[in-house]
Length: 440
Ligand SMILES: Cc1cc2nc3c(=O)[nH]c(=O)nc-3n(C[C@H](O)[C@H](O)[C@H](O)COP(=O)(O)OP(=O)(O)OC[C@H]3O[C@@H](n4cnc5c(N)ncnc54)[C@H](O)[C@@H]3O)c2cc1C
Image (cartoon, rainbow, N blue to C red):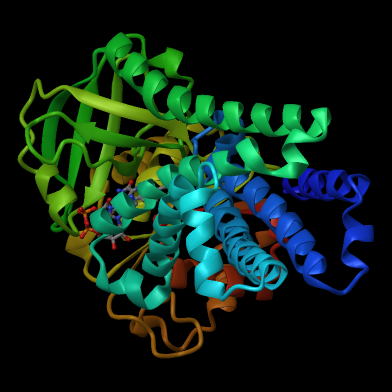
């Protein structure tokens, strides 16, 4: 984040050194066009970082995790969009005032007569579509796949919107430092998208020759898929991480779905466990052995590297149990020092039941299954059967020396928020709580 803020200040500094501030002091049309230039610069800078954030660069993915990146993406997206609108409005009003023409005539002139502006208009249209479709209400109505496809057009939108500034913007062409900065950032961003989102996933999938080995039901609403390949240790994947998976079994293969590793990865096998919630997860149940698999990843930072102590408390709702079993298989702890709390509506829904039983038997994990309908009380993460408990007390009851534990959390966002609140009430430090949301 400091890189994004720092470079934004840098582009503003370049604008100041080019006489930006003096140009605003006349309080006339020039003031508007000069402010229009600086808002455009800041917006372009943020838009390029916006794309970089979503380019799946391993350094970012490991450093911030998917949730952290998604949060930054939203924040940067908000500012880049409003600055873009301010840029357009200020320039149209400023130029129209100077030329004494109507706003529409000025807008028309920009679009048709300025180099790169037709492309920029198309790009802006795409960016507006992305922002509108991401608004909470619209997002609820759209299928995930449609929203995601539209979101990918955002890349195209940035690709089309930014070059007009490089070709014509006074702030780019006049100052060699600015020219170098902008072309470098633009080239790095484009290269990262191509390398990390296309070339590396294709190369990895080919190199490791991944294929479906076995598909089995996992609880009453889930499915586990075992995928075999060669030299999988070279992927550098760790328990707690996830990949984006594509199963090449026919139409629909192009939609990638993120699934966490459900077992500690080894040289030849990766395992995922998915709760069936829609078309993509339903398709998993029909996979046949031998189906080729493409992966993007590994991603995510909810690994054992975050641990500070000896003891582990894992809390998982539904499919959130998948990364927890992987972590419990991979991590070191003494018998009795690891607790797994699972949350399902019915005992039959529990996923990874076999792996959990093995962990209890062979590694001394303590397993507490909290099943049943949601509690109407304040601690909505616990079932109604435990309504007499305050969530924070229940946590202390299960792990009386709670300060000694690293807590791992995975499940739906509201559930995680409720658990986190009770963990904090129970006195668990923020930096001992590690989580990954199964949501974008
Ligand atoms: C980092 C991460 C790790 C995950 N790990 C697991 C796991 O181990 N096991 C598991 O059961 N689920 C996991 N999920 C959730 C899983 O990706 C979605 O449930 C699945 O993609 C739903 O696809 P669908 O077509 O069956 O359902 P749909 O009906 O298409 O979607 C149901 C909901 O799932 C979400 N979703 C759909 N497609 C995607 C996608 N491509 N990327 C992100 N979210 C999507 C959307 O919020 C959507 O509203 C994970 C999600 C994330 C973000």
